[in-house]
Image 1 (tube, rainbow, N blue to C red):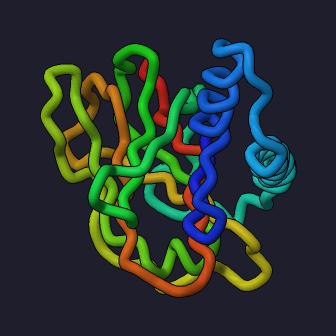
Image 2 (cartoon, rainbow, N blue to C red):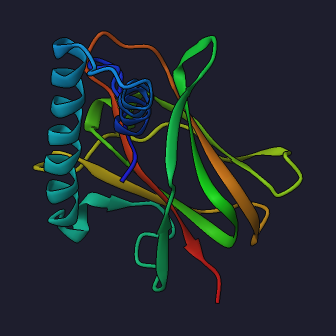
Length: 179
């Protein structure tokens, strides 16, 4: 699962890459970096468990009940120079007609847009607007929407939220794989 949290500013995949770089140089990473990596892993594991247990009422959007295989992204990274934009990428293009992302209620409220990148590197708006808010009792929500342009090859999703002082969590980006 890929995760991005603005308050913590920790992406396990990036932190793990940093740790791997240190190991490749035959140096033990500093204790504070190891702690940050361990904390990010633990947070990602706990979030994965909570997202798996979300009730169906916590899934919003026109593809909320879509049947099929949701294929998760393999990597997450902030967009350089845009601290409130995150790119979730796939190892290879995936034919899809819908996306899904998990957000905490504050991120849902501040969600500005979701874009998809096609196999040619072109970004298209996949969703824009504002949600009314998370249903009562939903610690996280999954937003599942169809692409306005229909099915096409997707290589990445870019999620942009408006700035906020509270913790914003965007995680578990996936697309509904076409048969």
